[in-house]
Image (cartoon, rainbow, N blue to C red; front, side, top):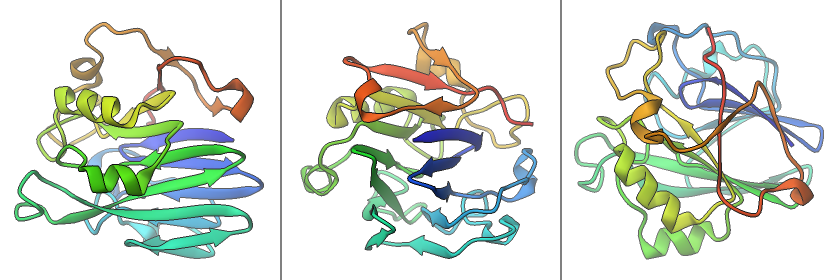
Length: 209
Protein backbone atom coordinates (compact mmCIF):
# COMPACT_ATOMS: atom_id res chain seq x y z
CA UNK A 1 0.00 0.00 0.00
CA UNK A 2 1.23 3.47 -0.92
CA UNK A 3 -0.06 6.68 0.66
CA UNK A 4 0.68 10.22 -0.52
CA UNK A 5 -0.64 13.47 0.99
CA UNK A 6 -2.10 15.91 -1.53
CA UNK A 7 -2.99 18.59 1.03
CA UNK A 8 -5.55 19.22 3.77
CA UNK A 9 -7.55 15.96 4.14
CA UNK A 10 -6.81 14.67 0.65
CA UNK A 11 -4.68 11.55 0.17
CA UNK A 12 -3.90 9.26 -2.72
CA UNK A 13 -4.05 5.64 -1.56
CA UNK A 14 -2.76 3.01 -3.99
CA UNK A 15 -3.54 -0.57 -3.03
CA UNK A 16 -3.97 -3.81 -4.98
CA UNK A 17 -3.71 -1.91 -8.25
CA UNK A 18 -6.54 0.49 -7.30
CA UNK A 19 -6.21 4.24 -6.74
CA UNK A 20 -8.38 5.85 -4.05
CA UNK A 21 -8.59 9.61 -3.50
CA UNK A 22 -9.98 11.11 -0.30
CA UNK A 23 -11.65 14.52 0.10
CA UNK A 24 -10.59 16.51 -2.98
CA UNK A 25 -10.58 20.25 -2.22
CA UNK A 26 -11.42 23.51 -3.95
CA UNK A 27 -8.44 25.61 -5.07
CA UNK A 28 -9.53 28.49 -2.83
CA UNK A 29 -7.88 26.85 0.20
CA UNK A 30 -4.38 27.54 -1.12
CA UNK A 31 -3.19 24.18 -2.44
CA UNK A 32 -2.93 23.36 -6.13
CA UNK A 33 -5.84 21.21 -7.27
CA UNK A 34 -3.75 18.83 -9.34
CA UNK A 35 -5.39 15.49 -8.70
CA UNK A 36 -4.58 12.26 -10.56
CA UNK A 37 -6.89 9.93 -12.43
CA UNK A 38 -8.27 7.48 -9.85
CA UNK A 39 -10.69 4.61 -9.49
CA UNK A 40 -12.55 5.75 -6.36
CA UNK A 41 -13.19 9.13 -4.74
CA UNK A 42 -14.22 9.15 -1.07
CA UNK A 43 -16.09 12.26 0.09
CA UNK A 44 -16.46 12.62 3.85
CA UNK A 45 -18.92 15.54 3.74
CA UNK A 46 -20.28 18.30 1.54
CA UNK A 47 -17.96 21.20 2.33
CA UNK A 48 -15.94 22.88 -0.42
CA UNK A 49 -12.59 21.85 1.06
CA UNK A 50 -13.59 18.17 0.95
CA UNK A 51 -16.08 17.56 -1.87
CA UNK A 52 -14.57 19.15 -5.01
CA UNK A 53 -15.00 16.04 -7.15
CA UNK A 54 -15.15 18.28 -10.23
CA UNK A 55 -11.40 18.84 -9.81
CA UNK A 56 -10.66 15.13 -10.27
CA UNK A 57 -9.99 14.53 -13.99
CA UNK A 58 -11.17 10.92 -14.11
CA UNK A 59 -12.73 8.40 -11.71
CA UNK A 60 -14.94 5.32 -11.80
CA UNK A 61 -17.10 5.99 -8.78
CA UNK A 62 -17.67 8.41 -5.91
CA UNK A 63 -18.53 6.98 -2.50
CA UNK A 64 -20.39 9.03 0.10
CA UNK A 65 -22.35 8.24 3.25
CA UNK A 66 -22.73 5.25 5.53
CA UNK A 67 -22.33 2.45 3.02
CA UNK A 68 -20.40 -0.79 2.72
CA UNK A 69 -18.90 -1.56 -0.66
CA UNK A 70 -16.31 -3.87 -2.15
CA UNK A 71 -14.28 -2.87 -5.19
CA UNK A 72 -12.01 -5.54 -6.67
CA UNK A 73 -11.37 -7.08 -3.26
CA UNK A 74 -10.99 -3.77 -1.40
CA UNK A 75 -13.57 -3.28 1.35
CA UNK A 76 -14.80 0.24 2.05
CA UNK A 77 -17.08 1.09 4.95
CA UNK A 78 -18.61 4.47 5.79
CA UNK A 79 -19.29 5.20 9.47
CA UNK A 80 -21.45 8.14 10.55
CA UNK A 81 -19.88 10.92 12.61
CA UNK A 82 -20.34 14.55 13.57
CA UNK A 83 -18.47 17.68 12.44
CA UNK A 84 -18.87 19.22 15.91
CA UNK A 85 -19.54 18.27 19.53
CA UNK A 86 -23.25 19.13 19.34
CA UNK A 87 -24.37 16.18 17.21
CA UNK A 88 -23.96 18.10 13.97
CA UNK A 89 -25.99 21.14 15.02
CA UNK A 90 -23.15 23.54 14.18
CA UNK A 91 -21.49 22.00 11.11
CA UNK A 92 -23.46 18.91 10.20
CA UNK A 93 -22.57 15.26 9.80
CA UNK A 94 -19.55 13.55 8.30
CA UNK A 95 -18.60 10.09 7.14
CA UNK A 96 -15.50 8.31 8.41
CA UNK A 97 -14.19 5.81 5.86
CA UNK A 98 -12.52 2.52 6.71
CA UNK A 99 -10.55 0.90 3.89
CA UNK A 100 -9.40 -2.72 4.20
CA UNK A 101 -6.89 -4.06 1.71
CA UNK A 102 -3.67 -6.09 1.72
CA UNK A 103 -4.39 -7.14 5.34
CA UNK A 104 -4.19 -3.48 6.39
CA UNK A 105 -7.04 -1.47 7.93
CA UNK A 106 -6.97 2.27 7.25
CA UNK A 107 -9.36 4.84 8.72
CA UNK A 108 -9.90 8.36 7.38
CA UNK A 109 -11.69 10.38 10.07
CA UNK A 110 -12.82 13.25 7.85
CA UNK A 111 -13.64 16.44 9.77
CA UNK A 112 -14.38 14.64 13.03
CA UNK A 113 -15.53 17.16 15.64
CA UNK A 114 -15.91 15.05 18.76
CA UNK A 115 -14.57 11.96 20.51
CA UNK A 116 -15.76 8.58 19.24
CA UNK A 117 -18.65 6.78 20.89
CA UNK A 118 -18.61 3.13 21.92
CA UNK A 119 -21.01 2.41 19.05
CA UNK A 120 -18.70 4.05 16.53
CA UNK A 121 -15.67 2.24 17.91
CA UNK A 122 -17.51 -1.07 17.54
CA UNK A 123 -18.43 -0.22 13.94
CA UNK A 124 -14.85 0.81 13.16
CA UNK A 125 -13.14 -2.20 14.73
CA UNK A 126 -9.40 -2.67 14.48
CA UNK A 127 -7.37 0.09 12.81
CA UNK A 128 -3.75 -0.09 11.63
CA UNK A 129 -3.48 3.40 10.07
CA UNK A 130 -5.52 6.40 11.23
CA UNK A 131 -5.73 9.71 9.35
CA UNK A 132 -6.66 12.21 12.06
CA UNK A 133 -7.65 15.90 11.82
CA UNK A 134 -5.52 17.88 14.26
CA UNK A 135 -5.95 21.59 13.43
CA UNK A 136 -8.95 22.31 15.65
CA UNK A 137 -11.55 25.10 15.24
CA UNK A 138 -13.63 23.15 12.69
CA UNK A 139 -12.55 19.70 13.94
CA UNK A 140 -11.23 18.10 17.12
CA UNK A 141 -8.51 20.09 18.85
CA UNK A 142 -4.97 18.65 19.16
CA UNK A 143 -5.61 17.32 22.68
CA UNK A 144 -8.84 15.68 21.53
CA UNK A 145 -6.98 14.18 18.58
CA UNK A 146 -4.70 12.39 21.03
CA UNK A 147 -7.74 11.12 22.92
CA UNK A 148 -9.19 9.73 19.69
CA UNK A 149 -5.84 8.09 18.93
CA UNK A 150 -5.98 6.39 22.33
CA UNK A 151 -9.49 5.20 21.52
CA UNK A 152 -8.43 3.69 18.19
CA UNK A 153 -4.97 2.41 19.20
CA UNK A 154 -3.58 2.39 15.64
CA UNK A 155 -0.03 1.49 14.67
CA UNK A 156 0.42 4.54 12.43
CA UNK A 157 -1.10 8.01 12.78
CA UNK A 158 -1.13 10.43 9.85
CA UNK A 159 -2.16 13.94 10.96
CA UNK A 160 -4.20 16.02 8.51
CA UNK A 161 -6.32 19.19 8.30
CA UNK A 162 -3.80 21.58 9.85
CA UNK A 163 -2.34 24.98 9.03
CA UNK A 164 0.61 25.24 6.63
CA UNK A 165 2.23 28.26 4.91
CA UNK A 166 -0.05 27.61 1.93
CA UNK A 167 -3.41 26.89 3.58
CA UNK A 168 -5.80 29.85 3.70
CA UNK A 169 -7.99 28.43 6.50
CA UNK A 170 -7.43 29.69 10.05
CA UNK A 171 -6.61 26.52 11.98
CA UNK A 172 -3.72 25.34 14.15
CA UNK A 173 -0.37 24.18 12.74
CA UNK A 174 1.02 20.66 12.99
CA UNK A 175 3.37 21.61 15.85
CA UNK A 176 0.35 22.19 18.10
CA UNK A 177 -0.42 18.50 17.77
CA UNK A 178 3.12 17.12 17.78
CA UNK A 179 4.38 19.13 20.78
CA UNK A 180 7.88 17.78 20.28
CA UNK A 181 6.83 14.15 19.89
CA UNK A 182 8.94 12.07 17.48
CA UNK A 183 7.72 11.64 13.93
CA UNK A 184 9.00 10.59 10.53
CA UNK A 185 8.47 12.57 7.35
CA UNK A 186 8.06 10.71 4.07
CA UNK A 187 7.30 11.80 0.52
CA UNK A 188 5.31 8.59 0.09
CA UNK A 189 4.48 6.02 2.75
CA UNK A 190 4.94 2.48 1.46
CA UNK A 191 3.67 -0.10 3.92
CA UNK A 192 2.77 -3.79 4.07
CA UNK A 193 1.09 -5.75 6.84
CA UNK A 194 4.47 -7.25 7.75
CA UNK A 195 6.20 -3.85 8.03
CA UNK A 196 3.60 -2.19 10.27
CA UNK A 197 5.38 -0.87 13.39
CA UNK A 198 5.03 -2.59 16.73
CA UNK A 199 4.30 0.68 18.55
CA UNK A 200 2.67 3.95 17.57
CA UNK A 201 4.44 5.84 14.79
CA UNK A 202 3.54 9.32 13.53
CA UNK A 203 4.05 9.87 9.81
CA UNK A 204 3.99 13.33 8.22
CA UNK A 205 4.48 14.50 4.66
CA UNK A 206 6.14 17.59 3.16
CA UNK A 207 3.84 20.51 2.36
CA UNK A 208 2.16 20.15 -1.03
CA UNK A 209 2.39 23.32 -3.10
